[in-house]
Length: 281
Image 1 (cartoon, rainbow, N blue to C red):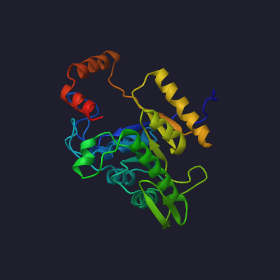
Image 2 (image 1 turned 30 degrees about the horizontal axis):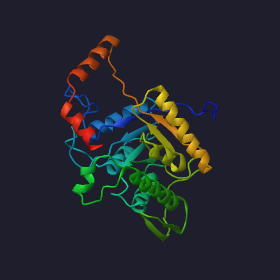
Image 3 (image 1 turned 180 degrees about the horizontal axis):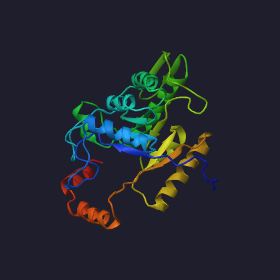
């Protein structure tokens, strides 16, 4: 089924470098810094130049170039308090969070930022983070099934009094959150993002998410993902989520300099990190 073009304007977001090692898996000299002072300045700069969102990363332990990491939700709140309009998306892992606890944190962050908090539900790819913390590592599709239940629970707590859920992964009994997040007809609760290229990820996005991130696909691949997500939403009887496309830009004074930098990134690829990441996914 074809769909008319969206009337929504294009919005811009950037990855928050709250982990060390930069944003490319290469030994090239990195121009970003994982510390708070740099990130505060970057958030203000992004806000003043028309960016709508900042997406913080989630990592709990050293791996594949990310030797140091700041926790995503607390770092996101710090950036929210340093800005006026920028929406900040905090990444969380179901299995390491209870949705009721995150709902409480999110409601507080939403009030402190006047309705600019958002969440990215990450089903997880790094097994060692879970096993090192004594948590079970679920099979791929089960992780997405848990994430879907997590989102259903989160939305219920954010929007309902006396929320109830008896799921396979979470239990909520007669739970009322006060205060709830700031709500409006256009935004009944903080926006819920997710990514993932698999069939399970696409199906979940269509059924429960507000935004779906596409990553690492060509034009035809992205088109297929969007159609799959929209079909899943139609089957679920809901409005399809919005779509975000992850792209990386090399910004230099000239195209020649940018292409030289690209060649240097590839030539200095951190092959150990690349192979380690590949084996962990």
